[in-house]
Length: 247
Image 1 (cartoon, rainbow, N blue to C red):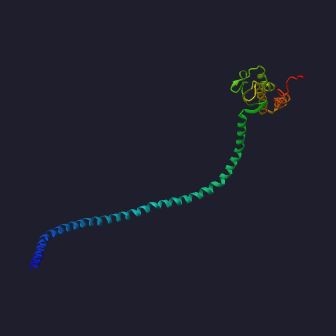
Image 2: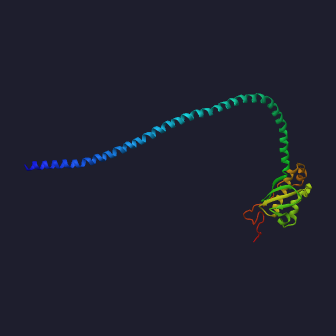
């Protein structure tokens, strides 16, 4: 009996709590439901109002783009009509004139090139003597001779060597008409002077081939083949022998 009474009491207590809690839950549900409805009501009209306007604007812009493209077709037609007229009228007449002008101008260009080659006025040559090698440039001038950046008298201390260098110019009578720029290396003073003389003689042939006969006769064009003879074993030099003693 006691268990049945306790069970009935617990059931009644649960019913009372349900009665108390039910109105609160219903009030909360009622509050939330209208807010959702209001939100949906507000969102719906925005979507329905915007879509038709966008559709109308796009439809109105499309035909405007098509109208702008129409003049391009007209330009293409105008170009197609003008080109053939220009080609047919100009080509036959212009070809003959251009050919005649080109033929008349070609010889003039060739003459100008030949004149430029003569106006250079630089005559170069190389000469050798013993172990010396000289490179010489002849230029129209007043007879100034420079060797390795110095004057002829400053470079060669011996009095006879400047005379050797000037021999080809004095023979052809061009000493006062040409300037000489020489670069020489190797050997001694005598060999360098002979190398410069050989180079000047060769450069004068570039100036004028009429100097060949007198330069060749004087021997300035030939390379002097005399070179120091090698030492032999058993001797002091190439040919010097030690003193002979009989006893």
